[in-house]
Image (cartoon, rainbow, N blue to C red; front, top):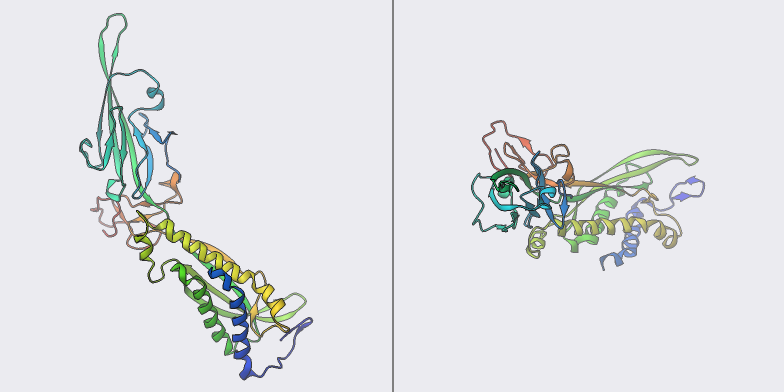
Length: 346
């Protein structure tokens, strides 16, 4: 047992140690019972308008299953001028006229909205603006053509998970109760977050000897695990939302992370107020830490160089690249015959 001056030999028989550990975990679990209760890359956005630029293409990022902003077939300066006999001609990523497509809304003033955006809608949207200039003295008419190109990409929010690290003091590293304690801890944590369809994965621990200043040599369990939002039944969350489910699953896993954080923050209080003597295995105060982990759905990836204005987004993989899993990188196809957006295989 821990004492004020360091470590002494436990008075608890080894056979009764598991019972002490189980009791400690039971109290700690009871203390936490209450826990159960991008930007678009654009030149300018004004009132959800994205203006073109004749000098370069404009990048636009549209969240999956939502409507794009209004793409304006002119630049901001031109929009403030008088136009005579303006005409607008939009072509989509397939090189065909967009007029009459059921998923686009074209206005008579040259604005385009792409509705219910999906992977295959990604690509180059080009508009040609034609208008006339009439000389005031001769009334001579001259037609002017201007081309505006928008590169429009589907994106998803990254799926969040959290890697947790925490430490517990133990009596010795070869103690059989260490593994029993670890299994009980994992069960308690899973129970705390089970109603969120989140679970604990990739859990492990190692025992190390630690030299503490003014306390001598101690033994500690270094525990790590991941809080993951995809426990069995998580798909039902997606059926309850009208479009994509990243927002819903991300909110749930953040709540799970917060509950687990609260569980460990209450350990110090519980140990001080519920035990006359510290149990053989107990929480190391302030040892709880969390690392944020992102992943992307297949067909999407992150690239803070190509898509620096949407660096935190999972952007659809471009033609010639693919992503077969939930990592964050679109891989280059060895045979670049893949010419679609959002490929999951070459």
